[in-house]
Length: 274
Image (cartoon, rainbow, N blue to C red; front, side, top):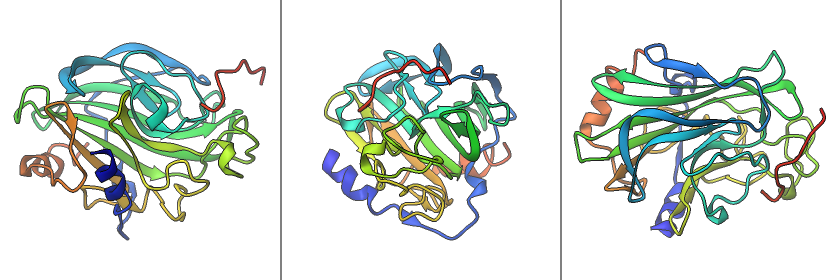
């Protein structure tokens, strides 16, 4: 399955429609904010429904400031490792060195609710800066979980949604400057998921300098997967297994999107004095 997913990721298509529509409104959800921080995380938070992820039934996640959620422990690592080698179950729309301490940066927000008759959980990283407290470049992206127990117990979908990606690494990640990766040892951003064992997936361009940036060769805001919306990447989890990207989501998924939802480390944790 891993080789199939990696091959299909390269086929994530680029489209020309406006990308801002990929970010879904969270106005109908009960949202909380992670206080301004660098490398911080929430404790376990409820997502509002029970889901089967890689054979384990869960209803809570850790929301990590650095662009990902985890399930068994919080993650403070700021320079992303290859997701396949992390030995940690993770869903990461944009794993990089997010720093929200500058007042001009947005903060990480998360929350649950019901939209279109389905339980959903969302995490927003809107207009967030990078280490160390830099805001000359800002990124906006989102993770969305949707309960699909109408199909089977524990089934759910998750989405990576992107509006703008203008930086791809922090200044402490191996020599980067101005938010832009300088070489492959500078810890460029990664996007994908893993079950902590053999099953893993990363979007094309993950771990490649400047590939994810707006206008880059694997621009996240220009591409899509299982979606006709630029900047949206949809994954379906059935019986605990993330389905290959060429599997078209069930029609009811598209009905939900069109109605209810449309209206809404190479380096380890360091102590930094900045």
